[in-house]
Length: 399
Image (cartoon, rainbow, N blue to C red; front, top):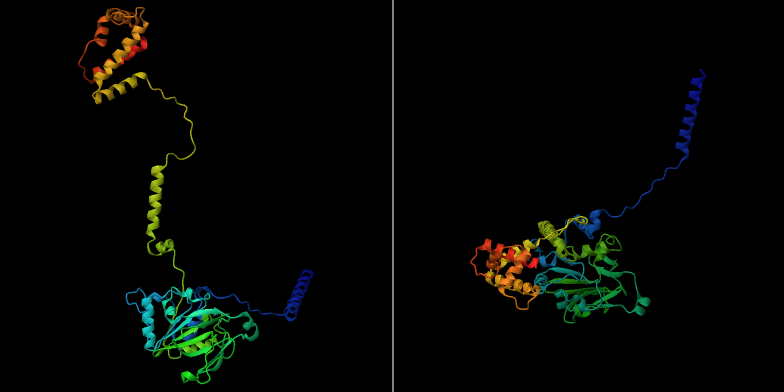
């Protein structure tokens, strides 16, 4: 009974603790921003695409300028006259051919937007013939002017949304050729929108504009110091979303041309011909195997290589036989043998008979054999020639 009472007491204490914890501890919920997902990090205008698709306007991302109006391209882009083309930076290379096609498309009613977020001066547009034909330049604001008249946003007067604010790049302003037909401009220095946007002579244009619109035929070119106002970070800031709706209100699709660094040659090979690397590795291994002298540690070989003099005579004899110089070799060796033998004789001019007798005493060979070996001309085959040379060299060593 005592044990059961103790168990009940412990269970009661635990129950009291649980109730106390439930009613006295405060529950807190906190949201943690984990940043963009991988897809949004890889595509800076993904939010723009998703937003415009909700209004039945397609956004073609990561387009390439060289694919515009090119039916022979792997991914041709043929926008309709009512569509909108956006160049997200002035650094995009636009060839003269593509530029001419763009102007022809704009004259039929097309609309092109170009972001000029680049360094000062027209020289930075050397690869963009479209901007060079418009004689577009960007310049820095005067610091003193900025300090006195700078406003955070650029104010724009729109037909559908009234006056809106957009936070375009505020450190630059744009100029174009005096020959172009300007229809609108706006500046960060003031609310520079058109009061009476009808007659050209009644429109007041600000010299230091961050947004300029140029009429070309039935179409329009909008130059902005910054189109990044529509990226994933800024599209919901200010009235940026309203502005893209105003510009694209008649478009069925938006073609966004993005600048991308050209791939290095090794990246291109990986993408289009990965087998090249396997072939390169195979060739490298074959060359290593072919040119390698040894592998592993050096071993000291203790064996002594012995070359016998008779082997040398045999090899030399074969050489003279093969080259047809056997008689010259025989005469030279015989002459050297006789000269060395005369040096050993006591008489300064010994006779041939005395020389043969002395050589016979030294070698213990018969005089008749020595006479044949040293003095008589003989016709030999290859084997006998080598034997004769070996005998003559043996006699030289005995003297």
